[in-house]
Structure formats: C-alpha cells, structure tokens
Length: 366
Image 1: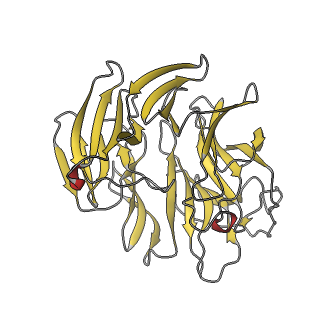
Image 2: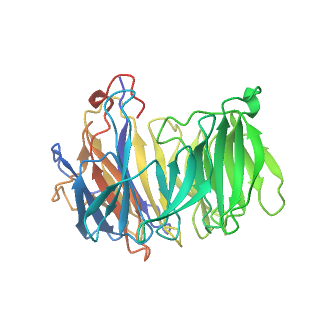
Image 3: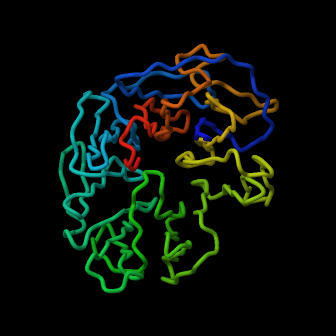
C-alpha cells in the first residue's frame, strides 16, 4: 500500500531552479513532548522557543506568544482536547472547544456550547458571538483577513430539506449583526485537513464548499457565483501571486506579468503542495508537500529556498543531517508549519506527536 508523507518547503518567488544537496538519513526518535522551532527564512538558524506536553496539532498566534494545540483521543468516541500554551509564562490551559486565531491580533475564536465565542488570552475575557443549540449548531467558521467579518456554517438538524440544512452566515464583528447568505447541503466536518471556506486576502470575496462545487460570495455586491473547480484558490497576501494546481501542471502564477513559475509538469500524481502558508504581508510561501512514493519506507523532509541563482536546498534545521530533525521522516513523524513571524524573517514549525493511523483505533477520524 502506498503511504502518504510530507516534506516542508519554503519559496522565495524570485527564481525557480533547484539544486539539492546530498544528505544522510537521520532517524527521529519517538518523543513525549511537542517542540516548537523558530526557523529563519535563510535556513541558517533554528531555535527551540517552546516545549510542551505531547500534542497532535497546533497553530501559533499572530504575535508568536500563544499556541493553540490539540490532543487527540485514541478511540472513535474519545474526545479531542484543545489547549492554549503561553510561551512567555509556560502555562498550558485547557479550552472549551475547537479554536482558531484571528488573522492579525491575539484573539481566539472558540466553538463553545454549539455556538461561538471570542476569547482574549491576555485578559481571559470572553465575548459571546453566536448562539447555538443541540439542534442548530455551528459546524465551522472562518475570520476574514481584515478581521471585520466572521463567516460560519450552522447545521439545522430538524430541516425537512437536506439540500438547505446548512446555513452560511456572515457576521459583522463590530456590530455583531449577522444574516444568512446561502442555504446548502450539510457536510460533516470530520477531517482536520478539510477546508470548508477560503477568504480572499483583501476580504472582498468568500469561497465556500457547496453541494459538490465551489461557490463565491462577492461581499461588495452580495452576488454569488458557482465555479466548476473543486479546490479553493490560494493567493499571496499582497495579491501578487496565486498558487494553481491542475491535472497536468502545478505552478505559481505571477498576477502582474502572467508568468508561470512551474513547480512540476505532468503527471500530477505522486506529489503536490498542501497546507500553504503565505507570509503575512508579502508573497513568500511555506508549504508542506504530499509525496506518495511507490516504494518508500522513508521520505524527504526539506525546506527549500528560492532566492538567488543558484538556488539551494537545506535539510530542516541543519545541513547534511546535522540537526536532530534530519531530512528523512518515517511513518510516525508529524512535523507541521504552524505560522509565520510578523516580521517575515522567520516562521514556526512544530514537532508534534504521531498521527499515524496505526496509533489510533481503526475507525478513528484523524
């Protein structure tokens, strides 16, 4: 059976020639803690900024002080427990529900009692945003990049029309007024990797999954459009570049010149970028890459830098396997990019607990 592996890549969208360096395999031992690294964009330095109990997922706050993280239960019905870790005080606090960071400020949006609240980690103040009930609950939510709007889906379990049982709301985060913008078929949000919505970086358009296709809500006009593609677009935060993947090619599109920066040509089968993390203000790109090698027991984990000709490749955290995290990952490794530093001179990577399916009950959704 083919297995799924991941490697980390960073792009400076200036050149696109790759000259890999040779490296040696370094085994990664099982760990009882999660380690957070801050990695410079030139690949020359990485430092440990936090060590916390073993967790499976994470994301860092915009300031880089707080980490939202999750501990998965082993069995099908064992709960996922969410936490917040304060890097400054080294305090780990249990949260009331699944959470996401606001894009610019250290505000945490939390699913609580089937609704939504906004939590300030500095003051511990909670603001109720959306009411929920056991029959009409919030399924998922996304904050606009300018932090003006909250888009969320509520599921009406008593609806007599399954094709309209999920309601897309848009809430103004200043007035807290909200309204339904669309009614679509409900899709249960099982997978952590499954994205239900995508905001354009300028916050003028919202894309969302709807009845097997992608729909677009244009906020200035209120008009909605249905697109044939089944994946969301991905734009740099300065709106100068766009990531594109098609059946026969994968590339970064320069929206100013129309030039394609080819990442790979056909066939698009064995590898492609996933979990793209654009730098906060510019167009650097950190991404995890899915690899499906047909005969692999190990896989590469690399951070690539495209800066000046000739380009170069660094193993994560060191050259030629000099760091504990060498270029090879095995089935049990779970290394994820969790965010960028505001100054765009570094980004954050977490060495997390294994999410290998064999570590959990056979029917566990991971």
